[in-house]
Length: 206
Length: 138
Image (tube, rainbow over all chains, first blue to last red):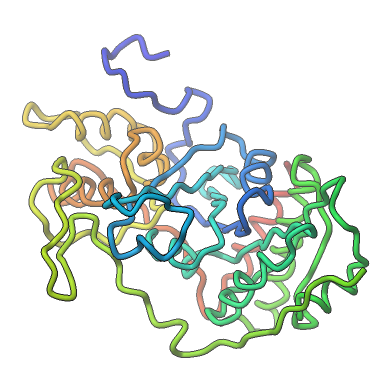
């Protein structure tokens, strides 16, 4: 609690303050369809309670998606949840969970272009929701791994079948995970980092 | 049971062309009446600093007497480094509005920005290794 000020704007808790030595940040994007578990994954590994940043989309984006409902709206708000992991006293990692529709991506300056890489979170109950997301990352040359969030009621396919169904390039890792579990989500991020490292070793990353 | 089937795509020049950034303040387009301004806290339109979601912002000064309530709030929040995304979340303001406010504050030397490390053609392996070590400690 802030005893000094009279301001009512909530800020980070004292234990959530970054050290003054924090010099730079990197980001990883977790992308997937609605309800696939992006925020769950962000929350399970984040050192802070997940926060939400918003952006406002004006008329240009309206009317192309029936999710937006009323035509009389002149602006709509797109939200993105994110979390944070302190890597060292100098370096901070941020994780952003973003909707799969590409028209949201340009709302946040360099969301994918500046990211180290992306995790595509897929749900076997609605596998086709991830098709477009994966295609867009391929087109943009964003390195990514695929994580299959295992839901109890979701169909289970062998990983080889999923790789084939998603038509993934042979080098792209695909793993199963339980986004609710910190260790499992951490392993997904490690899979991405090892993949990025292997790309860096071979100089293949563009 | 067979899962549905996707077809792979490849990097294409067209697809990586940056999509024009919408300006919430609105400059109109296609000859229509410009949409109304949604926010007035940012002051007159101008050039915006190139701020990323994860650019770290640190206060350089105490709020001057002339500071707006938003500037005062920003300076209080950034006594320790804080990302633009976190500022947006805590202030409950859209990202683009925060970048406009911060542009003014950077010009006035009220805050300092620490740029993020972005993906490069040849990424720094030691950076990737540092992130891996950090994740392993989780």
